[in-house]
Image 1: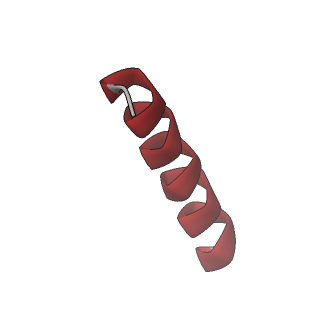
Image 2: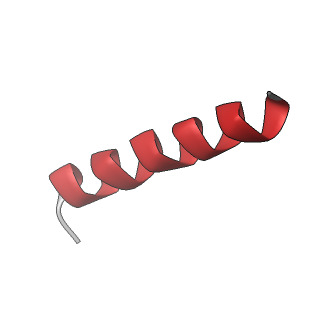
Length: 22
């Protein structure tokens, strides 16, 4: 798994977490 793919997953996880809070 490349760092770019991992970084992309991290961004999606952060967005999902923010949506859960709202």
